Image 1 (tube, rainbow, N blue to C red):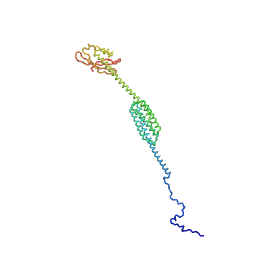
Image 2 (tube, one colour):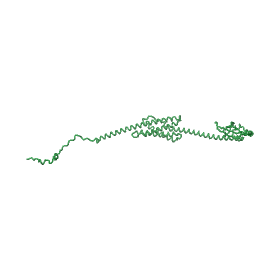
Image 3 (cartoon, helix red, strand yellow):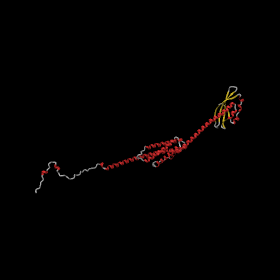
Image 4 (cartoon, rainbow, N blue to C red):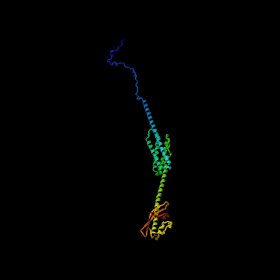
Length: 350
């Protein structure tokens, strides 16, 4: 048999390009590139886990430092405020304990105002303390203490300005303020370990101190008023007595000038009537000279309660125009609700 030979012409490529396309298909797997493909870093989830963890750590540390700073600042403010207020309160107690001896009430009142100013200043400082990231419980106790103490001392200082006008209602309200302030003070002290100085308990006794001062002043005012009233009454009585004495002396002198013994006797004591020379009233005793008129110079109260009256009597002569003035001094006493002349003394004219 003859072998069939391939037709060279038929199998030959017609075009040059066909020679490439007509090659048998290469079914082998291409070799993997020696340079490995790497993933992009920000697409790695662990990267973001690390970022979040670092951020949380930084924020936590920062907040922790802020918290620590705020707490230290607050603790220092509480410590300074407590020391200032307890020191000023001690001065109040020292002064009020000496009030019975010194009677220096104005200094005591001034110290209450000094304490009030100290508390007010500490309230202002506390209002500037941070409330975020802080020991809120401690800060709240301190602010509550300042508010309660300020209300109490402010009211006490105000009342001390005019203690005579303090009413029982004022003292009742002040006592309530004192109890609230004491409770807030104890709450702060008992729950704040770094506060060493104690609040003097006497500072919460201000209501009783003001009560005592008010009573003392009221008693003093009542005494002064009574003394003024007594003085006014005495002055009025003296004026009335002087008027009565003047009336009695006038009656006596009118009777003397007129020579009327019957008119004179009702204003004379029995002793003076026994001593008096009524014969000088007779006309024959006045034939050469006679009392023409009189003038009461003065009526004054004596230390023994009697009155002294001084009188000038004008005497004239019957046979010539000459005249002279004779002075008389009378002691006038009260007898049976009447003012009676008790004796007479001639003196120089007044």
